[in-house]
Length: 175
Length: 366
Ligand SMILES: [Zn+2]
Image 1 (cartoon, rainbow over the protein chains, first blue to last red):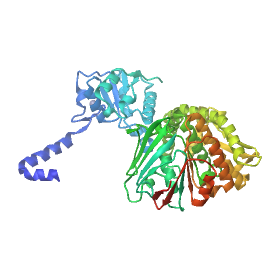
Image 2 (image 1 turned 60 degrees about the vertical axis):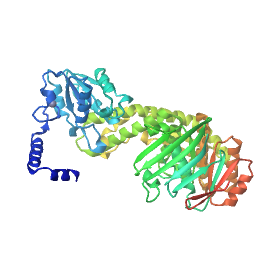
Image 3 (image 1 turned 90 degrees about the vertical axis):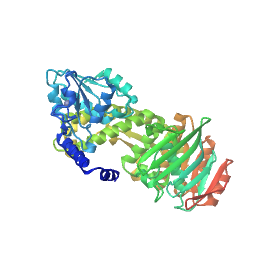
Image 4 (image 1 turned 180 degrees about the vertical axis):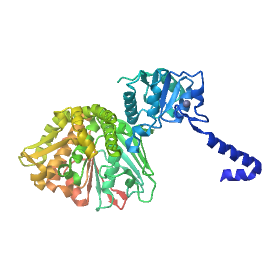
């Protein structure tokens, strides 16, 4: 309603300009072919950035987690958005998540380490356990971020310092 | 330990009520359906974060037409005041506060204020399925061991996920099933170990309790039954994997444990008389009380709901004598007959308060 009133008060031309640019944005926006981040190209700005460390991939549940980790400025590697955690109660099985693209990325020679930054919940545990088994065949180091109480439940609520520190001091995942 | 004062807002048939309580004996008197049990239930809720009589959701505890309820109790525990507040908003969001600080996990509150409820439907413990008995032991052990409840919550969550997965698709990923199996092992082992240890302590206390309330000379027994006593859960789950896939649920684990109730070697469910059955379940509850008392140092709060309907006057007298003799804590009793309760209480020299309950209104009648 408030938006409608605002638009009525604007000159017709500028409203049209505004709607076309929104339309263009929607047309251009897509998911990164690599890590499923949102992007206005085939690959997202993180994957395309030559200064990022291509040997490390951090697995997160959603785009919000990428924003939270990027805010810490402690991480220089790449990301892989899983799209959630395994939770059959909510109808999410392994095939509903971006697992196959992850396995494919893990198989590349350049990939050396995979960090799992998932929720400190039972479902998060299940997913970490599951992925680490799927990754066993590949020659990659698997680690998790410290998933203590300081996280307050979800990644995006963790304060930057704690999150940055736990990304730097990750724990090797025992199989 | 005792409840000093209690405030209810929109709880069941109460709009706004405040009560100052006796540290010893409190009687709620009134006709059926006036809200006596609801008062006991509000106390149970403050101790256990859930209803002691209703098995359904918190939503139905909210007064009809209202959006929330609030319970506020001031407990005296080891010379310290504990202000516990329970709030349900919109039937969904549940907040439990201890001295103004909300718990991060509600389960952390369980055990702080031990409580035992004796109610007319206790016979379900012996007559119904194994779920009733697991609920009874889980509630008892959880109140004396915080780690037990934590493990139980993990186990139940993993089990629910495993069952949902078994139902979700015909193309099951064996690797994921294996992970659920692994996740069940540690909590199951802990729970199984505690249930076994608990049965060993509980049984003699129960036998003594039965002897005290029953004039008969029957020999009662109580045996913990679990496949995990002889087999490893890991092996059981592997062996039944194919069966589980067909049935679409987990058929082995501590959620299948049970307790075998017997009188003179005969199963209570089939062979006990009404009197024996009542004594048996009453003894279970009294043993629960004694055991929590021993474990928690502070005496539990005892809620006696309509025991006169359940037991004859002599047994009630016997029960109260037992309680008075044994340095009991705070007791709450409901009764429909004011004269009956008055007469019985006067046999004992004990501090007490009487409240007349009428259609969600309370008249303090000290
Ligand atoms: Zn990307």
